[in-house]
Length: 325
Image (cartoon, rainbow, N blue to C red):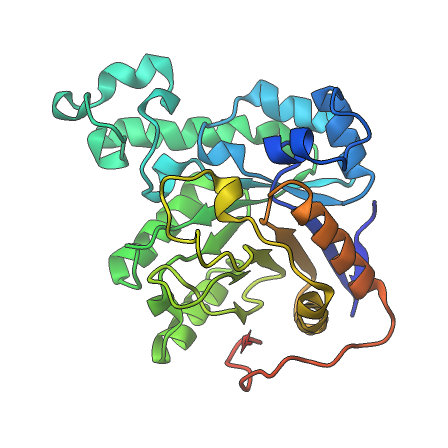
């Protein structure tokens, strides 16, 4: 499946998983539930030109795994890869740390339920960055790596130290493109919005816009902006009931299906975004059963239509082609 061409930009639509258990076992989207991993990825790639790898958030990949993704996908297919949780300040499974580095965890933290970067010496954290980067080399060398999603946690606010941490992460991952997603609304509130977008634009970093439930501490407003040649939008759905729950699976948290009436205005906004970027990645993270693949298919059809659709009410665009629903 090739990318769409809109206003001269390549627009790639996909989902944030091709192997989620509720998709492979609880839906009929794949022709057979007994399909092998290689067959599933090949089938997925025949429908979409882009996928986000979410599993790398929980466990860092190996070069061999990345090489298998290259072998199982067609030329021109694109993978966006989510950074391992330890690298972006999130609680991390202790057993996800490489076995030969386990002894490097500081003694006072070895029995903790979650692992954080501060539980390790700086040299070991640097080694974690190096290993993560090395693991993605097969994707990069094959031209299949769209970008590494750096998803920063709720506590990560717009401070000088936070901006320095972002730039340090970008340096660790060079030359891979880094996609910046925030989970704290203060990055985009008031005058801070222009400062944030200027910072990203000055460093040629793609801002990741999101659609998600509003009214929560972690809620980000639905701002779209092209701060680099690549722009990214991720659709998390509107499952308000489960958004802040910690005792459920990711699939349950993002259990939501977008009606066509919700997607049509977004298609108009994505066309507008495409006029300000060279490439746009559109990803559906509502990975409950076949919700994401069905919504992604609908979005592809809407974007392919030659005629526009009415825009949702929006505030006047902020600087750097930013707009908010």
